[in-house]
Length: 535
Image 1 (cartoon, rainbow, N blue to C red):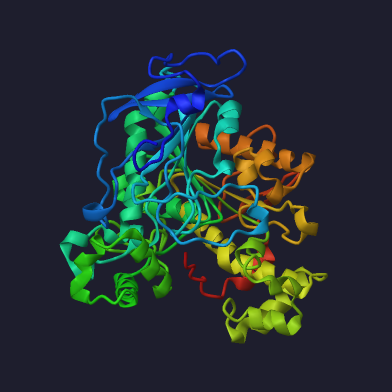
Image 2 (tube, rainbow, N blue to C red):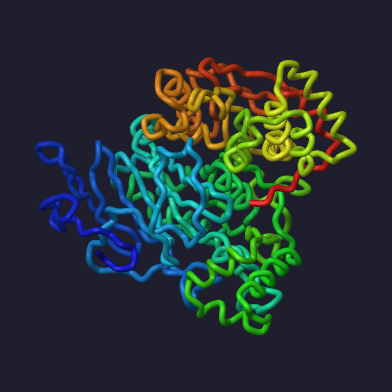
């Protein structure tokens, strides 16, 4: 094993291929992968040629964030002189274990975690060939608190082959380690603490800008994209001047994030952590000395969410409140949702929501719809969904409140900038797994966007229909990454979103373009204040 990153020596994985291997050689007889070597600004890295694609895993873009670097902006890793193995994923950021839904059983989950987690992974068709391929940088989901960029569904091989692009995934700091706002309690030495995880993403994008040409990519054509919490990260980084010029297109999948925590909220969360750990305010410096596991235990006891803070240092305002961020106004966007996001977001943790009666429906809607509005909202949805069960109504209303209204609002505010265009979509195909109970759940489109249906059987099932969706969605994402426009011959003509027609691509086996899709639902809920999403 090589250091904290747990990278396995090349000879143990790839036979006799070692440092003297060809920098970009052909596969060995019998199909065994061979080493490929690339230069970065910190040193050389050794990857592998797998299925015709050059793959590099666990490349450090930042130094370890433990000890004195904890709660600070990321630092560059130390340079290295020997060729460094980039053959295995690096550890994920420290986090609490989370329950796994049955529909995500086909997707891998990392086991190793470390504060030495600032690593990225690259899939590319070729090295140093001056092709200037579009670069697609993926921000993983899990809110601002969990998961990683190393899951098998994010494998970039098929996107590289289909679209001649470079795919990058990465890990960064999360939860307490990425968003514990200590500036009010600890002073200037903690100025970046509330947004350290977002600064990690900026650092990764800067690494891409400085190094991706070596990997066949174009630093002047970078698309950032993410789903769920990854979409929230895309939404947030679009408001950060530090990231200006480091990306040129943006895709938000089921994660439109409009606001951040206020400094007062961030400070309350920090006090909750200190109290849970038995520390006083004056003992903030001890947080840099405590073991990682002790910090995680305190976070579990505090039971609050840690996410980006409007610290007036890195984030000056809510990223999309009251309007779109001016710093990224010219960046084209693609924004969308799935039909029933909350079958997974809520139903996976609360199975009773699948068998509601009318009384249960009203009770479960309490956090989502003001009591005085419940009768009106239910009557309106029953009119638009006359055959719906109480559970159907619950998932429809909560999906709109939890995800779709935020996506609509983000698209409206992007269009109002009258600069970079924005396209809106919804995924309406229903997965057949487990008798169809999940409908069109949160995360459904990951298999389609990455064209990784074969790695996603538990989510999308088998048969020709999932691949039909993958053929359409991956093509649209690739077209958008290449030219800032998702139109492709495999789809109907897809106009940009404008307030006058609200064009929406509805993805299904046979996709359709619909103007003002879900108008009745949108107008029915328009009088309600936007639901504030906690991630």
